[in-house]
Image 1 (cartoon, rainbow, N blue to C red):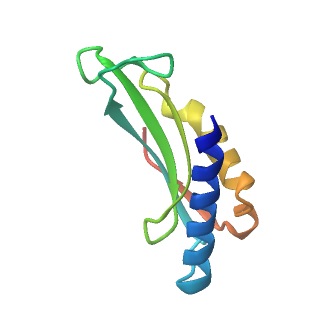
Image 2 (image 1 turned 90 degrees about the horizontal axis):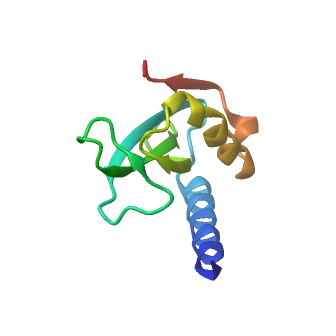
Length: 109
């Protein structure tokens, strides 16, 4: 989709500007997932185990020490968080931020 490239460019520019002006704190990163309802369904959704199997999606997000999202991936709701860790860290590497990473904190899930 043509709009995807423009959105990616906008996100990259916003993160770069934030890093120049305020500074990303990549010494401590947090990776966590969240579930979301997707009433319209679609191929990128799956049954949500915590919402009576209704169709939903999941985000796996990496944030810096201040909580600024720096990379993320989406998946069907029924995908386990542990299977999303590698793609989420790959998304971080595609942004060129992986060299500055210190510690990556994960939740118990």
